[in-house]
Image 1: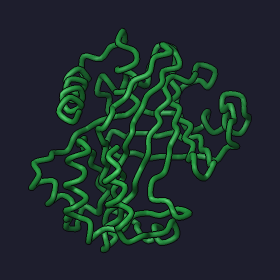
Image 2: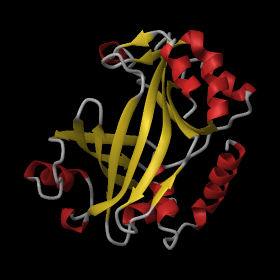
Image 3: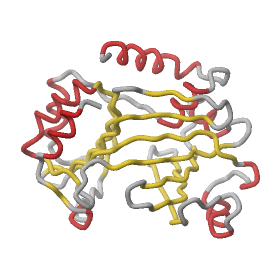
Length: 255
């Protein structure tokens, strides 16, 4: 990641985790974007004076470590690949700096809504053996817990921005790397950045205006699916080939 990106974020007005609770976003719309670090610099310069940067214990950049679970035949991956509307993701996410770990289930409904449920677990917990985590997984997702195993680790750094009106929240994921437990293969998105805008659908968005001016369009991307495709080339990935080519093209442009 370009150090100048952190320099820009560090000069933005701070917002604390407690203050973030005021960002309700009751009529929420989520939109993802894939950009280069150069594009991110232009975006940050365009919104700098209108957005807060989340600060936790004096830090603006937070490290995340997430392990995704799946069945041996990768049913969760395949269901996403095959465009099923109803789908689930099972993961264990660790907030590295705060040493907090959560077992999470993300459920996508046939209405396009994503519902996330999670429970906190001790750092280093094997959720496939822990009684509380096993009960949670049995209740919240459709696969037998005994059929699940770790498939992919994603590691990245995240900034979180909030506009002054508190009608939208933007997560910016940099330094995205993948490690596959099955193939023992690693991959990286290098200097590419995944942004996700969570906004009140009724409100004006300065960020969207900046993105429009920069000709940056929404881009659907799942870190789990792309990471699996990049580290398991033998698995079904016809639908993701166009995305993989775009990622490689952007990586080349930004090198």
